Length: 145
Length: 151
Image (cartoon, rainbow over all chains, first blue to last red):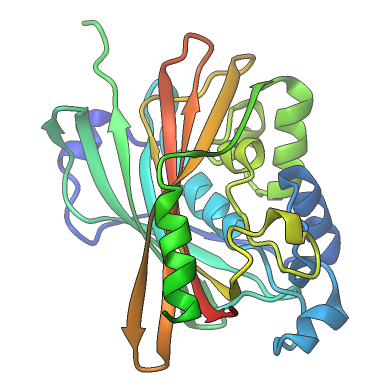
């Protein structure tokens, strides 16, 4: 976990966390689609996914975003919190594949209107290729002395 | 007028109008357990917390429906071949276990884009998440790119 004192002195590019996820299973995608009420068959129907040109079922983009967000969230405890995450997907992730996530600081924490914020970069890789690139931020809430 | 332009015009006319409203939904133990299960996150310490991305479960931000599955939920009947153009999430504070969240989404903007592979329509949807006092706790902006259009 990072506290504000640490966040202030982080250098650009400093790696804050690396985490390797397990390969995605069809069951996990079924749970995720049920929880988020997603009905697009590309996320749970192999025949449909193949008919649209993918070799297999496609992992939901929002699940990938949820992972990237959680990688950030694990670095702080409430009331400190994830302030933002903006993600562009650069490639598909398919069922059976696994994502590896790396969180890097892009600068030390600075104080602004929203309080102290630490800008971060969150990268999702699969089989050596960058498939998700996100810019995020953590907010550190001032505590009473 | 092209089918793309007609669809963009229809969507721009709907800017700001509610697409859907929902809630309040309580961040109770079952809701959080269901999301943790769906997330499959390997860090057990996170299990007692409210994952910030639970908003994705509450708000059904991922409107990636295909015409075959839920045609009545299409953003516009004239747009096809959707591509996920990215998502931006902002949180104003940490979410708390047990609190109730509601939300509303609307079309923020729609425009045409010319690229190497031709014309596409870009649609931005914004969802605002509110706490029990009606104060915003988060917002999400989703970009969908439609590469096909039918008259």
